[in-house]
Image 1 (cartoon, rainbow, N blue to C red):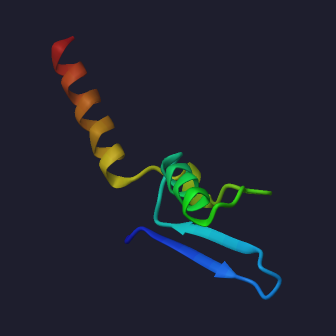
Image 2: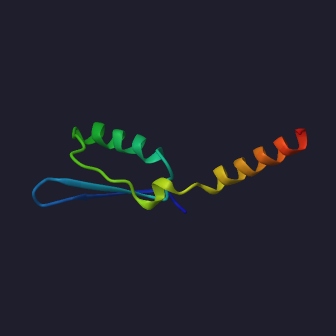
Length: 73
């Protein structure tokens, strides 16, 4: 899945942002960058289901690690 940041600027000037396709704390770096670019502060936030999801690369890394550990036993 492609990584995206969806930013909405409302009529009252408030900004909503949402990340898509990012897993774990990866999204937090993007929000820090957005705060800097917009000279803004996060007033509220919530984790999406993607926060707890594990990327395919992380899954394969775990499988490779477990496999090499089993061979060394």
